[in-house]
Image 1: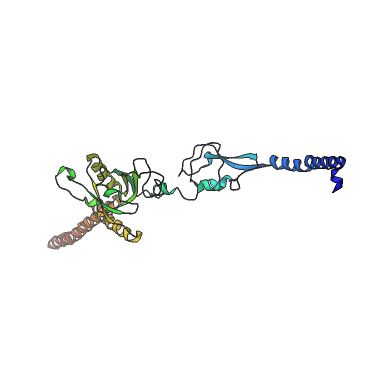
Image 2: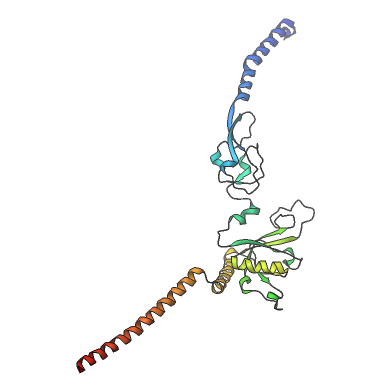
Length: 284
């Protein structure tokens, strides 16, 4: 090791190392930095739960150095997916920010088929909303005090069994979904969102305007048993509000019956007339 004490040797070693760094390591490093990669970038504000469409994103070329491993590089990967986090123009889209289904707190709004509607009613007091104990999937009855200004407290037949799809606090966060876990004190429910038909929504709107309604829990349990209550309610609605198609079929049936009765009456009178004519001819 005595040769390391020679300054000339040390100088030569330093020169060799510097040459290796300059002509080998540095070019490799620069090459890695200069490499380009195509990624998907946001062009419009995207809110959590929004479906991502073509006009919201674009493909751009950027430096490939230090990019996240799960950054999305193909627009086809994100189109039709749902945002699981808020994004602003210029953001890169990574896999954790998109989902096949809408965010949990908005999922029930994406399941509407058009036959039923989501409608919220106010919880005027702690008692009227079942003391904040309602959760999604509950089957409830709507009690109307002084229904239609008639002085009687009733459960309208249209609102005997209604499904709860969300319970929301005044802040806009849905209860029982973990959204308020960070809050020091959880807010009490402010509204209850129900899954209703257009006929039911009209009655709920009237009760909401009057400021008089109470919610009572009927059933909480499996979806299969809850569906039985909804089927029973649908049967009542069908009797109370027959569809236009059913009315048309009923009217058509009645018309056919009247036509048939008219034909039978004509058939009975025609032979009689014919017989009389024949008799008169014979007389002549």
